[in-house]
Image (cartoon, rainbow, N blue to C red; front, side):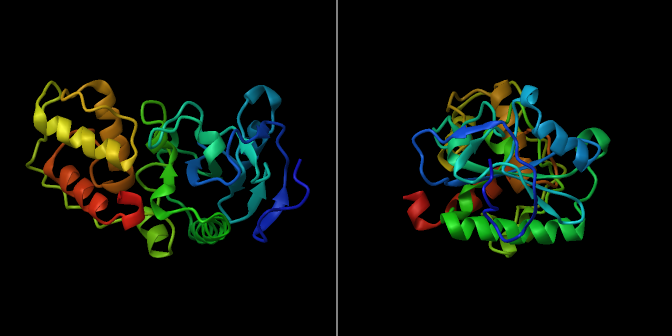
Length: 256
């Protein structure tokens, strides 16, 4: 149960029964952002509070910018599912989850309204300040679960959030539309080098040297977050350059 809201930005509490104590973690270090993928925020909140759903989130932000808290921040909400980041596999224990209401890809991935984005910025800044979450640990659901999830999607305002002090971002290298990228059956040291760079950033991938299905999923997840101009899962020069630029811009404490 939520005794009182963790953030002054909360306008309503709708407790979910789907939570438990964090496992071996006292302070969350990841802020994980989702979209609801349902037709209405009421349906999302209803689903997140049903015991049989076995899912929840700490917060939901509706299209008008109202914030509903569902799980206390010191508790483990069930929002990440099977996921991995930087070698860690219990992402639920490590994170605070925010569901941003949006009907999702199946409904054409509507734009995120201004009022919603403005509140998302404010809530993220509040959470980050209270838990000292590093910029590169503000992540998409698709980052930590690339073979299962595609939210919050390529229209999510990552660049704007970063300009407001939320998340890690660099200007993506423009897509060269004449560059077809590496073939899906390619193999060799260049692919291994890209896999190594993705793993060093945090993605759950091994440097096999082969362009296997998991590599394609991870590249798509990277593109959705950091190079949304073209999300095709192909390793092209724009993707490689953006990845290298992003890694080079990491805070020294994170890249050390």
